[in-house]
Image (tube, rainbow, N blue to C red; front, side, top):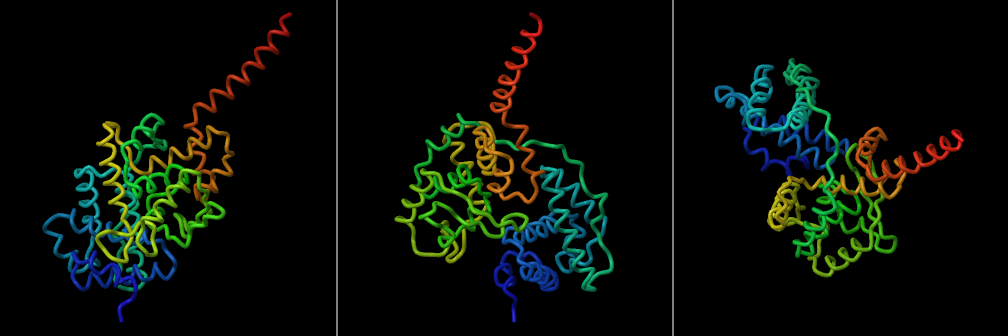
Length: 317
């Protein structure tokens, strides 16, 4: 009998032949049994697809037929091809990490003796700061959104700090209108949390509820019955509205989550509280945002320096 993962992922694994499909399905089923998030499982499928499409043509058929035939040279070729295709180093490293775990699973279950993904395959990546959408662009962006559904999608990121995957997976039974909260289960890093609604989110939720069709998810797929909206569809929506708003600067949907964090820090929310609201496992991740809230830093600097100057002026008299 097929496992639950095979039912969901068999279509997306159609680029593989039967042997490789079963290898992937066994791994997905093992992760599903350990409560891995849907987004993680989809990312693994994407990494396998990238691997088989970006290796050299002479090796492609061998990997599609049996993934255990993957060699270290195949991974090197994949990494080089991914760079030439314009993938960001951080994206390539994520795919390498997912592939390494996949092949480690095959090694442990006896399907292969070798681990083809080495630490030396990892690319050096620059340290980048979170990139929030600035307030002027935010206002312009939301002005061009006339869809009730789409406005709510982006408001949930901006006002509640939700990740794209969390918006996609949000179900109606997670919404509590009485408390103006939503429960996010199995967030990134397997962190559960409660997020709060602002008044504009609450109003948008009620408006969307009045328009929605019956179903589990807030944002069901319009193409696949019973399925949820996918991340790439939200990315596509973002680009469409940015173009309509004549915003030349590139923003991803995740920039709205960054804006949420920055605005709360500017308003004086403590880092410990922001950590919980963002669903970070470690406050070290939250600390990255402390480099962004220039308004707060400048205000506190000015206040402190005024006191320092007053003391020093007194001491000179």
